[in-house]
Image (tube, rainbow, N blue to C red; front, side):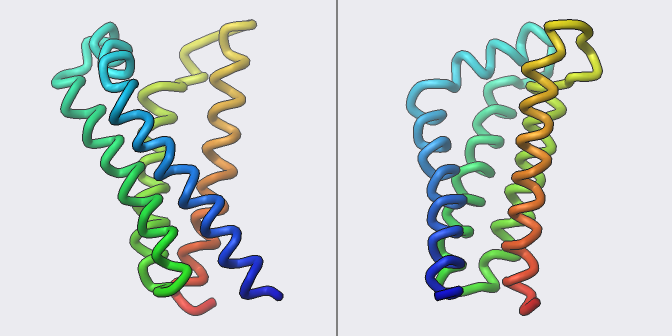
Length: 128
C-alpha cells in the first residue's frame, strides 16, 4: 500500500508541474516576461523560458522517479531551484505591505511547502 501512495504522490506532484509547464509554454510567456520587464530584469523572455524549462523538466523527473527513484534527486533539486526563483522573482512578499502583501505571502508559503515535498522526493531517491 505504501508503494501505491508513493507512486500517487509522485504522479500528483510531478504531473501538476508538467501540466503547469505546458500551460506556461503555451499561454503565459508574454505575461510572465512582461512582469519581469516592468521590473527592468535583463532578458525577461529568456529568464521566463528557462524557468518554464526547469518547471517542466523537474516535474517530468519527479514522474519518472516512480520507476527510477534516483531521478527524484535531480527532479527534486530542480524543482526547489525553480520554486525559490519563482518566489524571489514573482512573489517578493518583503516588498509589499498591508493587503498587497497577502497573496505574495500565501504564494511564498505554498512554495515553501512544495519545497518540503520535493525534499521528500530527494530523500526517497537517496534511499532514505
